[in-house]
Image (cartoon, rainbow over all chains, first blue to last red; front, side, top):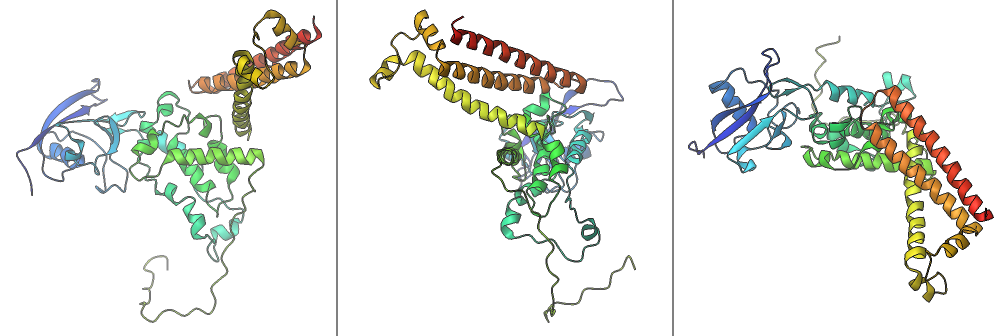
Length: 276
Length: 121
């Protein structure tokens, strides 16, 4: 059921570096229907009012992490926030803070990805041969999976960096997103790259610069809780320095399955169409 | 890793300071309560009593430990604040070294005073 008589004023930050104008807010009156998201509102503006309005978006379902914006004073995903849930007749939309603006609502996320790369966010193994040409899979129990799975839900939307007060003042701070991903691999029972991930994680601009404001955890749309990951990383380093933590022993590969029979009701996989 | 060790010491010194400052508060401001247990003094801030305490080796050791832990904890905290100001790397290193030298110099000077007070100089 729609209520087309209701309207909301969108105040959108406009900035075009090619025009040389300072960033300024522009108002649009948007008709609101039930279930309409902030992203839908932006699309309505683009289709009906101003085709030059720019932002990033893709999936419209909170998975791709493209549409991070500063909406009514909080970093949020435009696609997962309904206008009615903002409980306001004015929706003020600005690009994410703590990033440079490329244009209108498009932040420059290069800093986010540079920091993400700095923690080497991938499994590091000593057995390079097995890793590159696997004969089996690395063993991991359900308990070991629970140790890090929450932190693996990160969609790299960058909202946590926009909310972080330390990122706002320190450009060298590795930041909650990358620190969480560093811990995600340190906590992974299959990983052997403690030193490689830890180089950025435990640097002078790493976990120890976190003030534990918790803003990153508050704004994370996937419930990743970067604040928890940073505290766990600190705790781990503390126990390691104290000598109270056993050195991590990475899991080995599972033994090859022998004498297996396919279940009768599972259809045979089709032949590969590429890479022949 | 170096930063982990420094932060570890930062946490440990915080606990030590908590204990020593608790003792300081007890001795200096809760003398009447401590006298119930047969220890402490009703006039701990009298000059005579201050000098009398300073002549005890135990107090000298406590002063030196408190000085060392407070200096490390405070200067590491100051370094953390300075690091968040995003200075160039070279300047950050210089600041770290200056704070380290200042901390050692103040510790040596403070310890010297504590030892001299115990000797009664």
